[in-house]
Image 1 (tube, helix red, strand yellow):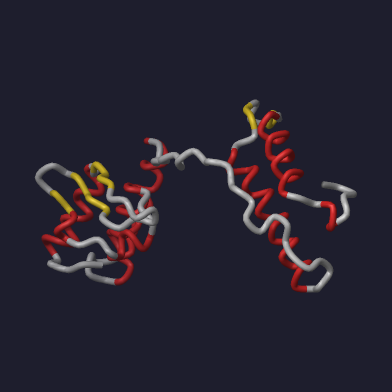
Image 2: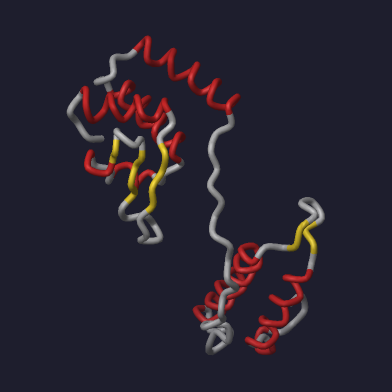
Length: 173
């Protein structure tokens, strides 16, 4: 939008901008610009126009109901084996120094489960023993950020951490 006057910005121009950006290549990744990136850019423009309305520079935000582009679902990222080895070494050292029922011991278990499942912190805090199927080594996240339920396979390390929390200590987080 560069030198475009604020009163010349329209939904049509924003849609043209979105279409133009969608055709461009991110030279670092050698891929098309993602819809997520384009949405972030247009959200910034919408926010700037909202500020212009607040400051009474323009009377209304012409992009107030601009449609966002459909985004791909986020990818699931797990730690690689070498990353797990480094983490396990550090956590093992913490385990040697702290009993499981200490704050540091419980934090160690939390870190193992969080990184082993990549769950959001609130999802883990809401995790109950009923959500953990030790027989099939599966965790069910019932109320995620997207309000969908999903299941996560437990690695041996996550299994042992959850077993220690729920079965040995008979506690929740």
